[in-house]
Amino acid sequence: MASVMPGVVGQAPVDQVDGRASSVMSVRADNLTSQQPWESRTLTRTTPPRPIDVTAVLPELAAHDRETTRLHPRPGAPGAAESSIGGPLLWPASEPWPTCSAPRMVQRSEPIAPALVIALQQAQAKREAQQGAGRGGRRSPEEFALLDQASSRHGATFDLTDYTTQWYESEAHREPNPLVAVGQMHARDIPTVRFPSGTDLLQVLWCPTDHQDLPGQPRFYWGPSVHLVWRRASEVSSAPGSVPPQPRDTHDAYLPTSCVLHPEQVTEYQYADLLPDALCERLDAHDERWLEETGFSYQYDLSIAPGCKAGGWASWHLTDPAPVNCRCGASMDLLLSFDSSEWDGGSKSWRPVEDSEANQVGACGPTGLTPGRWGALRIFICPIDPMHPHLLNIQ
Image (cartoon, rainbow, N blue to C red; front, side):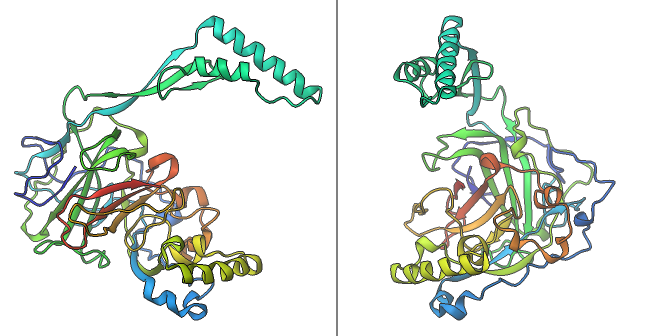
């Protein structure tokens, strides 16, 4: 789905539901009556200083820094006039609520034929017997042939727990699927993002199902169809109390918990593999020593912040770095990253000072979003004109 301003027509298949718009709460309605310590909206969030000053060791890195805004979402009840993730949107009463008409991907399954199940069980029993006798126990060519037969459908996988074959196929929504309000950010809260002229409010909505082959998106993208709206907040006249239409087709991984934000600007440094070769080689040498002597590494502790954020650098820890270029030829910038966790075991040095005693499971995954099996959904925009179509990536 395309980036749009009121009155500007986007290029992707975004439909509208007439007369059904206002302040919008997220689909996931969590019980917020009992707050945990990390949920307080009155607290700020402070990223600890980086354990190593990389620019003191490699001054050249200063030319590859960039500011990002860590959003620090925490469960709460934000108002429609506030920046939030999963909260209500400041939405004009007269503006239709957008919907999705792009086909979604749905999982299908069917049982493996009984005769093939018996053959697979026999092959497994033979392999396990060989393992018990100390004679290897790797799958034989015959067993691999049986597995190929079980997954004969193109792109299918198999589950040998319940002996089923599973695959995905494209299916149209029975009716246009209303989008979910994912985020709303005022320019004052994310100064690390360049807003289109005349706007100061960014709203993010998406269809909470998986899609493939979306118009204009990378070939291998698999995830929500994203819709951006840029507005001037002072020009919005909303109708208090209205409830937007709810989507019929949903995937829990894309339904956000209502969260208040605690924006904080921090400095990041470019992903190592995208630095100039000579600098990258010098960094690698220091990085080995840092890891050995301190347990900290450039990738996880010293360069790119984890968690939900606006602006800054994008990490490419799951795949090799991929070019993200606008149709105009410009290299695109990271707009937003919706991450499954604010920190994890490998990046816990980024855990805010105020959350140092917090229960890790509850505090590090506040939004409930888990794109790409606990990954991060990133939205990229053109630095020349943010109104050019955005691109999506999940790491």
